[in-house]
Amino acid sequence: MHEMSLCEGIRRVIEDQARKHDVTRIRRVRVEIGRFAGVETEALHFAFDVVMRGSVAEGAELVTLELPGRAMCYDCMKEVEIMDRLDPCPTCGGGKLMPQGGDEMRIKDLEVA
Image 1: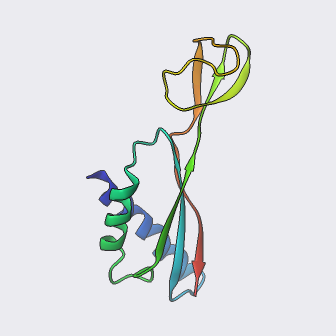
Image 2 (image 1 turned 90 degrees about the horizontal axis):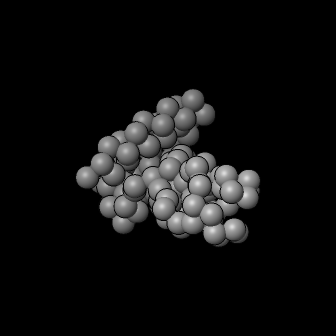
């Protein structure tokens, strides 16, 4: 389960920021996850609760925000949202799409106590 290692990375970032800003407790962590990032959100929530034990984010709420998949269509030259990497262009039906986003994962913000 790679979600455990993702949460370990999240914990490192949280602890670094908490030290930097003299924060002793994190209440909420909002994470943006692209549709194509390959992250199982249910597993991420479980891993988050386990990994955050003993940290400034122990007991914090994890909020996941799904980002859409995006691609550039070389047939109509528009950037479009797609549900699957192999979908045709929703604007023109073309099949020449270059993914432009949706595989990212990042901490959007932290709510402190």
